[in-house]
Amino acid sequence: MSGSEVNIIYNGHIKMPYNWSVGETGSRFFAELRDNQKIWGTRCPDCGTVFLPPRKNCPVCMVQIKEWVEIEPKGTLETYTAVSYDSPVMPKVEGPLIYGIVKLDGADTGLVHLLGEINPDDIRIGMRVEAVFKPETSGNILDIAYFKPSR
Image (cartoon, rainbow, N blue to C red; front, side, top):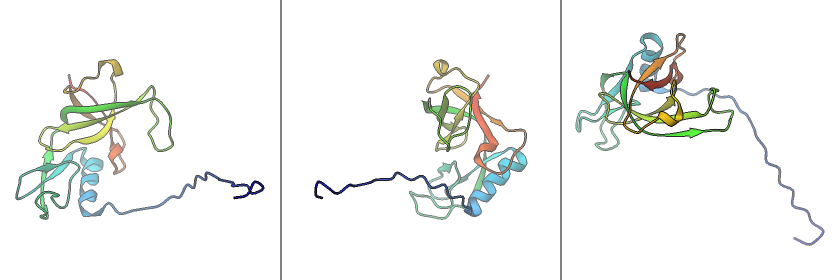
């Protein structure tokens, strides 16, 4: 580039709405959240791992999973992080947005979700938490409003 050329860079932000299918496994999982406020996972027939969120195929054994198991709405906080800035892709909450990985009783894998009804200074890895469902559900992961400390 010579001294007279100008390199102009425009940082664009395109918002494009879209629909996508959650498939057979996701459809059942979200329907159970919406209709029954129940959390379900899938169990591998070979290794016995219970996946939450549910999986159609075991990533270890490479076999199809057909067995569904109901998962308790209580579990253990494995780790967490607090976000103190707003972003259009994050739910709106008062105070810092706190994400955690929760291993629910009966599941072998963790579920990433929001934590609520807790002061960030009181959060501890290993603490017991329980799901809080929204009163009106719509068939997505945010039908679980957040996980709060178990009493």
